[in-house]
Image 1 (cartoon, protein in one colour):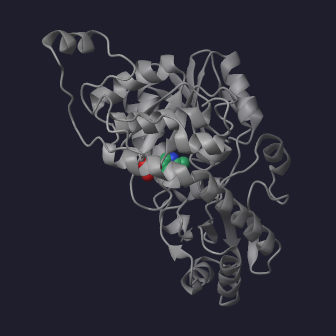
Image 2: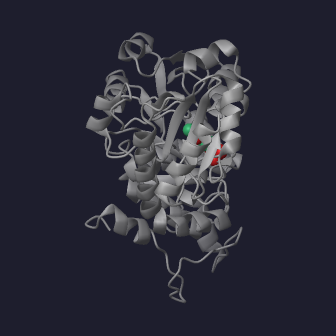
Length: 392
Ligand SMILES: *Cc1c(COP(=O)(O)O)cnc(C)c1O
């Protein structure tokens, strides 16, 4: 599919047809696979070929279709699909690290990512240094000769800090460290991680890939030697595989991924423009809006930055809750990247347990709202936010 554009590949890549020549991708809802002969079974366990399967925890044709299509969209060689985004983050890190290794990571991370870095890895003797991901000097100071992995969210959830991915990848590679990128916010549509040479790229496919609030999923993408090597070995033996049914849902969703994400991203940009300088807001944060502190760097690297913006409502928690409760179309939830527009109050939900000091460092203020733009009419959404701000 190489010669076709991303939009075409999102619909066609990776298809495996059964002998019935079905049009729509089939769900192979099977745990196991049978062999014509004992010799064939033996051979599969000696060396499994590219399109051969033995057990769904190791691989399954429907899951393989999703893995191949996502790898193709990212411009990398291989993928391993997982039960959730966190299974993918955990699998990527655990498969590369061992006791005594050192990791450098940005601090502005999704709560569960922080848990893996600070709690899980520490229990297994991996030392982790957290830095302000926007500060190149901090990255330079933290990387050491024994640094094995550099980890970051390319665009952080929920504060929308942008990593200068090119600079951090170059720095890591100059020090022989592997780069693992959590790319959930950036989306597979606007990703530059594959092109810039990140070693492993992780998605929560729960987010934009499903994008319709149904299934959990994740994927680890990258070079074949890593994905079919340590990543697959770790994940297939520890049980993080995606179910074929969920893979099928995700695969069908890829048909519309670019249509959905492009539209939702456009709405996010228009909403940022409509809210810029609003009297009831301290700030509007969208990395491709000129008011974002990292606008120039972001614009130089990215064509799009996803479908989410962050706003900071003036006053405190009470004013913010009045705003949230006055919304008619946006729904209060802790998820994002859905066809339905969603709002989240990180300080009291997803980031509630963080110590106040870390909330302050990360900018998780009482007025911060993560605004995820869905597929509804853009003008309706803008009007909804404006009337809710008026209601404070
Ligand atoms: C949602 C999310 C995850 C976890 O994904 P799940 O599918 O919920 O396990 C990891 N990283 C980031 C940045 C996320 O937004």
